[in-house]
Structures are given as C-alpha cells and as structure tokens.
Image (cartoon, rainbow, N blue to C red; front, side, top):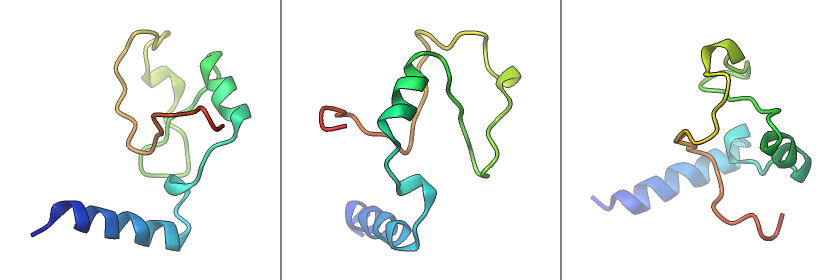
Length: 74
C-alpha cells in the first residue's frame, strides 16, 4: 500500500468536496492570529471556547493539520 498516494487522493477528494479545511485563509486572518485574535476548530464549524486554552499560547507547540509552512506568497 502506498500511503502517500492514499493520503494525497483523500485530500484531493476533500478539495473537490469544498471542505473548509482545504481552503486558504486570508492575509487578514493570519495577521489577526499573529496579534492574538485566533480561533481553533476541531471537528465542527464552532470554535473551541478560548477558556479551554492557556491565557497565552506563545511558545506552545500546536499541531495544525491544515496549515502552510511558507507564507511568502500570502
């Protein structure tokens, strides 16, 4: 089994379905997040309440499954 191919095909299908987790966020959303105005969703459209997180996430490692590593063109 080629797991890389399987994963690519699964994500391609999500893109075709228009999944919100495959869409690029705006530059404004990125800037707001950098200044502390962020939200995290897990499996629903509703963000996880902020009180579920530490007051500051600075320095924490957060796994972002739908993220980009190069924002140079955004």
